[in-house]
Image (cartoon, rainbow, N blue to C red; front, side):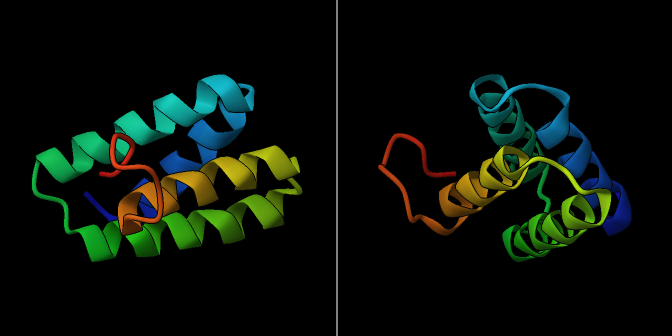
Amino acid sequence: MRREDVAGRVADLATAEPYERALPTLRGYAAALLDIGYPRDELCRDFERARGELEGRGAAEEAEDTVLDVMDFLTGFSSSFMKL
């Protein structure tokens, strides 16, 4: 899977639904990538690229919040049951 594809998909998922539904969807996408062996550090970079893409699209702030929250789950800056 190419990084551009992952970053674009993250941005798409973050804007497809309201925050309360986008968050579990995006977390599930990240978990699935990790489950198939996608490197965690690369996934974090993809999420950072997705933030830039969201800014370029002029997306709502809640879309960026969704991406940031899942980045917190990836880096362990969250409650233990949400960590990835």
